[in-house]
Amino acid sequence: MTRSPRRTHPLAALVAAGVLALAALAGLSALAAAPASAGPYVNPSPADIRAKLSVAAVAHGIPPKILYGIAYQESTWRQFDASGDPLISADNGIGIMQVTMFPPGVDVARLKTDIDYNIGVGADILVTKWGYAPSVFAVIGDGNPRCYEDWFFAVWAYNGLKAHNPYPYQVWDHIRDGHGLWTGLAVTPVPAAWLVNGLPPKTGPVVTPQPEHWWSPTPLPKPVLSAPRAQKRVAVGARFTVSGTLSPKHPAGAHAVELRLSRWNGSSWVLRRRVLTTDRDSGDVTRWVAAFALGKTGRWKIVAAALADADHAATTSAPAFVTVLGLARL
Image 1 (cartoon, one colour):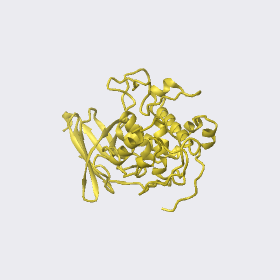
Image 2 (cartoon, rainbow, N blue to C red; image 1 turned 180 degrees about the vertical axis):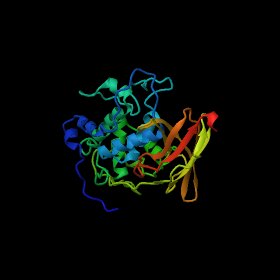
Image 3 (cartoon, rainbow, N blue to C red; image 1 turned 90 degrees about the vertical axis):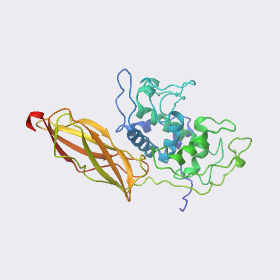
Image 4 (spheres, rainbow, N blue to C red; image 1 turned 90 degrees about the horizontal axis):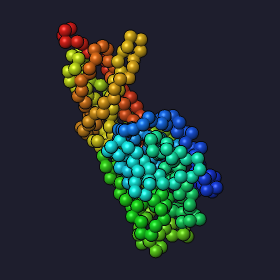
């Protein structure tokens, strides 16, 4: 891919002033949830977390899978621990991005309970570290923020500029693996032989490690979700199966499809439940399926939804309709 000249990152002016770009969080208002009530709390589904990370990455001009990998290294995609309490590490890192920098204006209490806010502040911190080049460490390549490899030293600095720090190599390993949460990308690390005393060199530029990988912020294609297939009439409380396809296919488990179940209340459809499906690759499509029961009679609408990720935009299917009958009417 042809490289464009090094451009100023959208938040570079604030970086130069040494201030986190908290104003960027306003751009995330569409995904920011209201602060939750007192715990215990529940982590969102992996599909929801992937979508939240993607939206924050795009808003900050960061290749999404870099944010995926950092969040996985920091917390394995958890905002809350097994007890439902905010995830806080021994060094006081908070939440999914393990935020430890608390500049003026950051709401520390909200970092603990609001996963969207936590991701946004973490993304701001990473953009701040990107701005360390070329004064603190060398620019990689021509410093294009659309090139994954050019972010290597900024990712290093997210964890601290410590000599022989394995952190950026661990994040790169996560990006390559995907852990069944996203489609892996074989990004190339900076070779250890290029470091100076185990640290990023201060003079450069450093050649971009090859092969290089690029991300584009242009609109992504939407996958195609078939309308859910289900029985037209089922008994209240009886399990039934809903299935369908997603194309083009994704590695099984890497892209969850969720079902959104709405019940007609006499005047409008009211969302009552979300159900995650399981999936497997079959030919050129991914086949998804879920089995569950509905506990109330009436008319139900079932819509399949695939949330946004680094490879494609969000999409929803055409609806399927199911009538749930009481046992006396069967």
